[in-house]
Image 1 (spheres, rainbow, N blue to C red):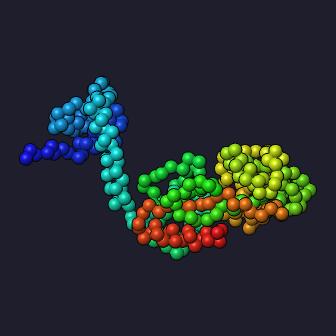
Image 2 (tube, rainbow, N blue to C red):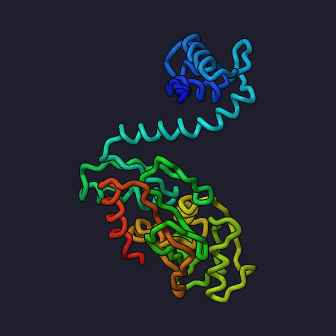
Length: 292
């Protein structure tokens, strides 16, 4: 039986980096070797496989058709090997938690001290993304994201309901000479969701025409809108889970006569079987049980 070609995986990795960089010099910088060493590895790989992977210029390289096909096939495999190696190097007591920005700033980070008290050996690295562009990150141990009512959430575990109610700064009430029993349509409204889908849902529940609301300012995150609300710029339809600090301190108050409206859910997905990841998920479940 004819022997299969035996090629160097290190040479394949060098090829993938050179193809991605489009420069032998840049590839050498990333690998910590000279451009001559990169060129030597590539020439050896080409000779072993009997193909030419690159068109070579003065300071750049570009892929041939064969090189392009080879790169498309080996690049995902190289990335998988590197991720697996990084996971082995990472301490078992370190977890990466990926969450939407507002949830991380308003609830997760302020609550981490309580988790540290329970599990002092676990180190948590928090990464954030916009709720509208929440990506899938392969190296994340736990992902936490928001789902609107009716949005498919297959594979995601329930964490808490998103209950929203109108809140306002006491300073705005004093300026207008009004008390807590005010009509929301009489106040300036703050927008924090695209197309005001949260306010439109609220209007349906309380039989208010959306045209009755007067929007004063618009923001792209709940966190930014909450800061504006505290500053007295208007009324916000605020998630209960994100406003505990402001309501406790009196920086914000709820407007009477309006029950909370459920607009969605917070859910998580655990991508790691480590003990630390399981401990963190159990802690989250216990912390947020009060929010339903």
